[in-house]
Length: 113
Image 1 (spheres, one colour):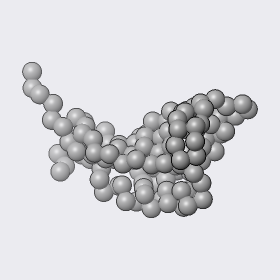
Image 2 (tube, one colour):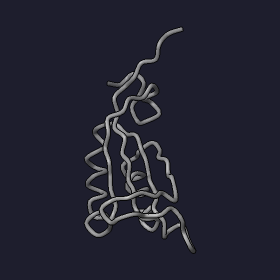
Image 3 (cartoon, one colour):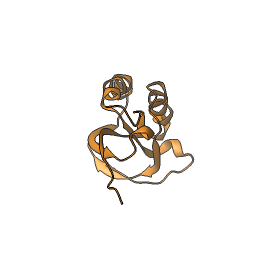
Image 4 (tube, helix red, strand yellow):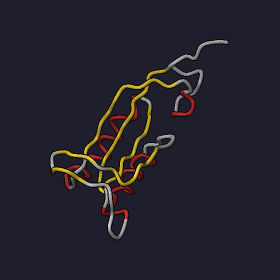
C-alpha cells in the first residue's frame, strides 16, 4: 500500500460570541474557504475570565469556535476580513501550520503546488 503524501496548509480557529458567528462564516465564504467546522457552546478561560458553556435563551449568548483549513494565500484576506470584528468585539483567533492528505478538498488542485 502506498503511503499518503501530506501537503502544508493553514488552520484558522476563531472563538467569538454566537452573535458574531455569521460575520465569521460570511468572511470565510467570501474568501472561498472550501468549508469550515463550527463547535457551539465553547467554554474556557481567557482575558475576560471564565466563560461557561451554556446558554439561557439562545445560542447567540454562548461562545462558538469556527475552524477552517485553507491554503496559505487565503490567510491574509481572512485576517483583513476579520479585523473589523476584532476591533469592535471580543474574541480570539489562532493560525497554525497543518498538513492535509487531500489538498483538493481545501482549495488546491491535486496537481497544484
